[in-house]
Image (cartoon, rainbow over all chains, first blue to last red; front, top):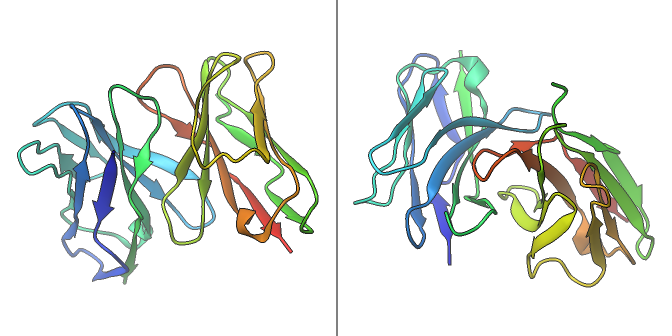
Length: 112
Length: 112
């Protein structure tokens, strides 16, 4: 079956630090990959996505590259801000299905 | 575009009572999804509609749970004879195609 594994949090960084949140997946075929973000008190928002191998998704300074050889989709940002504090979820959608399979989430805390 | 809306935002009920939640998707979206999220975990898929047809159901959706989308627009999720283990955030999402799902703010259910 499909599964997504994320690094456990919380991840605590100082403002302007470099961020990496690891995500690896198990799926049949060629899934689409997503990062969603959940700010405190708000719903899930799509951050970025990639639909095929070697695609790079990017948004708001965040990037993730679909690596089929390592079955990974790590999230990176060069310089985090306090406003980036949130929970980040990696997810996949198998092309044969409609449901999203999520990882457990990684809480990011950015201190001024 | 008003986004996905859910009602109520919070529901507190006593064990054994029935509850019903409503989801209004983005107006032009024909696909609608329900997920459940427990504290500290990623969302888990419950069920999926395309127009009024319920096409997928998770094994998590016990016989106490029923979902409908009678006219292919809004959807309801009913839980009968609630149990404490049903306490969770119930998320609704919609999409216009197979790829990006847009989430509502969720309904937080507390079963006492």
